[in-house]
Amino acid sequence: MERFRALILLLVLLFAGCNSPRRNVNIGGGGGATGGQLYVATPTAILRFASALSANGAVVPTATISGTATQISAPQHILIDTATNRLFVPNQGNATILIFQNASTASGNVSPSATMSSTSFSAPIDVAVDATKNLLYVADGSNILVFSGESAFSGTFTAVPVSTISTGFAIGAIFLDVTNNRMFLTDTTTNSVDIMDNASSQTSVALFTGTISGTQTGLNQPRGVALDGSGRLIVSNAAGASITIYPPAAVPAGGNAAPVATITGAATRLASPEQIVLNSGATGGGELFVADTGAAAVLVYGNLATVGGNAGPTRAISGAGTDLSTNAVNGLALDATR
Image (cartoon, rainbow, N blue to C red; front, side, top):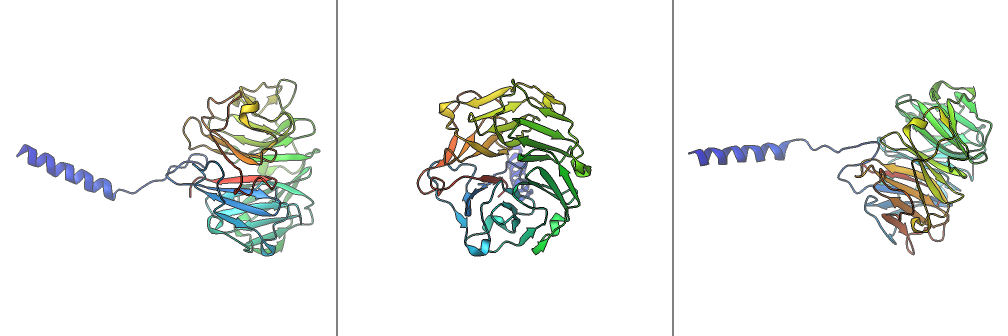
């Protein structure tokens, strides 16, 4: 009898488990039991690689977005809004922002769902979205242009910024920490990273909380910036070919902060790293995806919590067939949820 009761209990538990809802874990844009989608910007196209969380070697793109209808011309740092599956493309060739809806299935000579122009645009290089405040930030020259109503952008239209934030330097990259309403901006001329609190309420001349700069920082033409799950600031340096990582204590006051880790050396395969994105859901503190034009590759470094020194990438998308070897790798975006 006891054995029969145990059998009944086991069957009940198994049945309950089969019917319980499945949950996808998303930590800082990463994770989940999905293959992931990686988008890579080249001068005339956006390449999409499926199985991005495991892709390695001479992987053929799953799809290529290119052609006259796409309007793609010299795209720069790109952004995927994973919640809405929209891809934002700063287009320097014709000074526009392109938005592709249903990005994970877009392919071929498809028209963008939105083409945004502005009399304030000259050479847009990077974008950030704050969905909580319905704002789009565009880095263009020495300015941050802020536009409202980003969730409803569609069609071809001319937009007027609700505010223009002047920095006084040529911006190389931006990263928005939405939770803290804080923006990080790289300055490739003075080799620094500026930290701007209260980003959504700033206007006119930027008020910076602090600046990471100085001889100890190792910054050298910083072109990409991101934050990891523990609050460490990660920066790619195009000159000197390195990734420098700064402690949470360096934010927001900045200073002449020495990195707690530096990825550099021949084994890293870094040549001229540009835009970087983080998959926080990966084990070991996450993995870092690096667009590297000089290496004609997307380099991926795992175990970010402990990586440093002359460490080779855990994976790399490169080689014949990837369409990266014959094109500049201008930017990248990662959707680890699909």
